[in-house]
Image 1 (cartoon, rainbow, N blue to C red):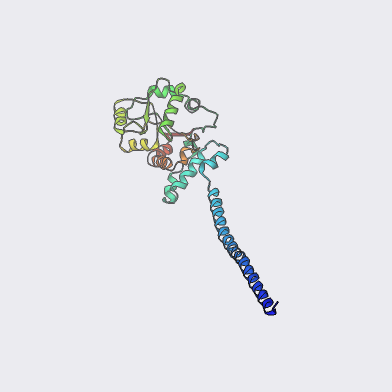
Image 2 (cartoon, rainbow, N blue to C red; image 1 turned 90 degrees about the vertical axis):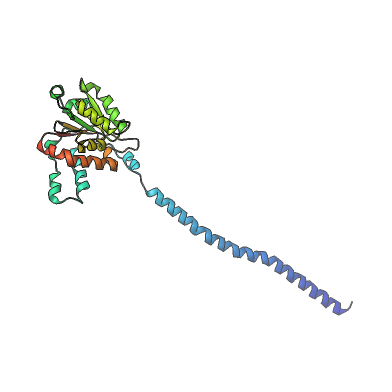
Length: 263
């Protein structure tokens, strides 16, 4: 054999092995380049998503807070504190002082053991006498405020053992026009009014309901709706209640003609 032929064969084998090495190494280089970029991009996104979820979980609804807390009966100090918080920023010291109610302005509060009828019997043992002596139109002896029309109907049904022969008027907006209620108050005589603070306030402002004959005002304080909110946990109801108290009720309470009760 010619030695030049051996050299040619060796060179050819070296070239083929080199090309094989290059072809084998190219995919490995690509894989190494892809791996760090994929890991680098995916990790921060996962962290951001988990951080957002954690923040969302921290927000608690009022129903979650109330569900964990044991029910406590309302007391006069609760009403006074809410009044101070509601009017504190926009009233002077003298005006806030005029909104203060002494203990003598309040009836015994419900301790959560009473039905509505038994509570009314306790706070108003001489109801039969008051009912018989009441002769004035456009007025009621007892005013009951609650958070909704449905709750008003529940309270009216539950007071059957107390009310006797007295007449009850519904003072809420659902399915009843205000003009209809104004006509009823003007022509008829009613002993108890049960309704929402918004409608009662509107009737008082239009002189359709006079509170000079009112002796008792009961707030449906402790009852909770499906979302576990009391009437004072609903901003609109709380505002309308305090507006009514400020404009019409607190002065009568301070004068001794109206007593407040928290049921």
